[in-house]
Image (cartoon, rainbow, N blue to C red; front, side, top):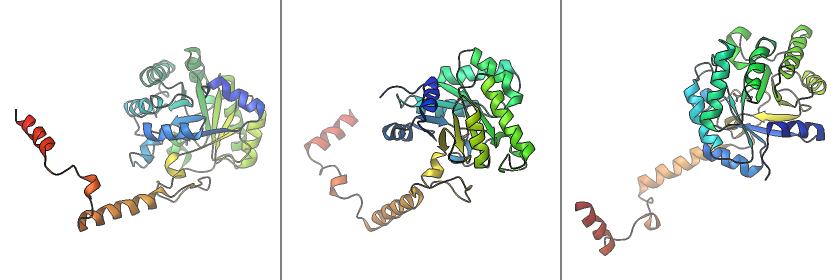
Amino acid sequence: MEKITALKLSEFKRQGRKITALTAYDAPFARLMERAGVDVILVGDSVGMAVHGRPDTLSVTMEEMVIHARAVAGAVKTPLVVVDMPFMSFQVSKEKAVENAGRLIKETGAQAVKLEGGDKYSATIRAIVDAGIPVMGHVGLTPQSVHQLGGYKVQGKQSESARKVLSDAHAVEKAGAFSVVIEAVPADLGAAVTQSLKIPTIGIGAGPDCDGQILVLHDLLGLSDGPHPRFVKMYANFAEQAVEAFKSYRDEVQSGAFPAQENTYGARGEGALRVVGKKKE
Ligand code: KIV
């Protein structure tokens, strides 16, 4: 399969071919996504909530992003791997943002970074792009601003806030981003932004007319606790399957059914004794 690049996503938009994106935080799931033909794997800062069980994404560190992104990028060849810039890794100054974006690329092998925010961060996006690093924008509901937004609320419902989402998306495009995530906005706004941009939009709760869609892995597999936002669709119920598997294991250990003969090394014979003997030497 041909490598998906940042440039290729624009080609997909021109062809009207929808882009599929998912978050992943480790090698096994990244590999499965590659096998399934997912185009973009985002190592999102949602790792803080999905994997580390925290209440929000604000405490996620650069070190954590490096560890998870290295696992993902090292595991796949075809999908485009994008890493989120965590809270306070790009907000302080352009210089610090370029340094941190560079670190994410150099230390992980990912091919692009994502950062939250529109107009306010256009100079920062430009600086990172000028350093040769592809940037994905993120507008609408930006979870790193949860306290400023007063919660995880749908954005762009009123005309002034809809205009802000649209102008943020345009600022991100003008600054040189190769695509933009639009989160939690009414479907007609998602469609309007998508139509008015040249770069592809990746929606999460932004309606069916975006150029692509993204979901958080743990939501899609039914591994995250509810209540879920309306945009989440559970494609499997791994939590139930996992609990059933854990219960069967517990029951079999307690009854002695596990380990069975096929899970057990042969009776102590010559071979086993030789191993024991070797250890003693
Ligand atoms: O961190 C994340 O997973 C994200 C997606 C929800 C787009 O930003």
